[in-house]
Length: 401
Image 1 (tube, rainbow, N blue to C red):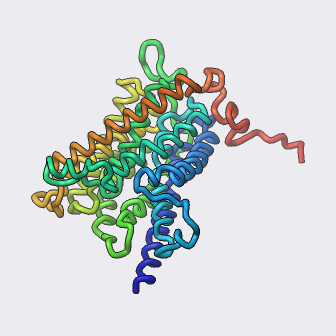
Image 2 (cartoon, rainbow, N blue to C red):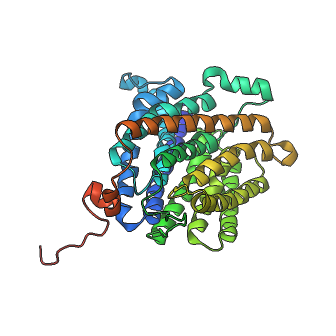
Image 3 (cartoon, rainbow, N blue to C red):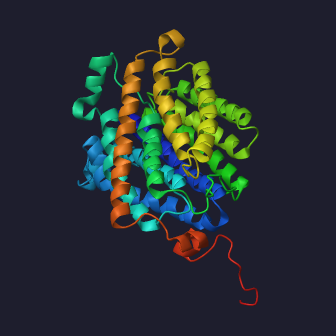
């Protein structure tokens, strides 16, 4: 039965990897629909390029940093247990590559292309796996210290902090270093309109992410034996809670509505294996409302030009999710227990500190040395023409064959 079990686990995790890989199309189209038309080609190009550079970074460096495993062995050794370690790498790579995809949405429309690829390589090879290894592999004894001090280790089942908060808070550093898009704010501080270029594309991206998220969360069990229907239903309840809250608080705005399910799903990742479905619903409702309120404050009051709202969506909703696992995971609130509110708070804040420090370091050095931002003329022309020499819908000369 062992070969059958090994093969089944490999297939299970491979399906999860492919589902999360499909989420990167969701990241792409969410950005395509949100940015102005002159930056749509760049959005598509960034996500595919970032995923590819992330694969190289994680294969050669990141997976080793997080789990102490390298692939400099012969193929016979790599095939052990039907190649489980390889497909585990593939699955966790799709998580790691989500970090640059998240950042891409925040810095859209004014970031240089190759410096961002360099930043993605460093983040996925060093910064993200450093924290990933602490939480999911017990590196440096940090989990033991949290458990000893607060009664339970930090719990993050599917990455509210490890993936989403990490990506959102690194993105905040990059956005602050870049500054707002040219013309985004007038001299009197008022904001000019930059409406989404395509609500259908935005919706397609949101739906693609939402469907793939069930692979993101459920397959985080990493084996058939450990799979849980509770994770699936909790993800569903948080998703719809986020939708309904964003619909009401966002006053029917389709941009807020389609980010609502993502806010709920970001927040439920950490405790999706512990909460009662009613607790997950509350977590999603809070996350949906939190996104709308903080996105509005970020853009209108604080003048932080985070184009897709990735800091409110991933950074703040992820932080809420890490903390919420220590509330709704408690047995007193219908959860399965084994968590501590203080441990969740400590682990969540540790993730924020590492993300901010890493983000300011990487993007700060690149800004000082290579430069982060397109010139004012390139930004006015649009990243599509400035970088890729083509627009999303070029005007063809109908007289040419």
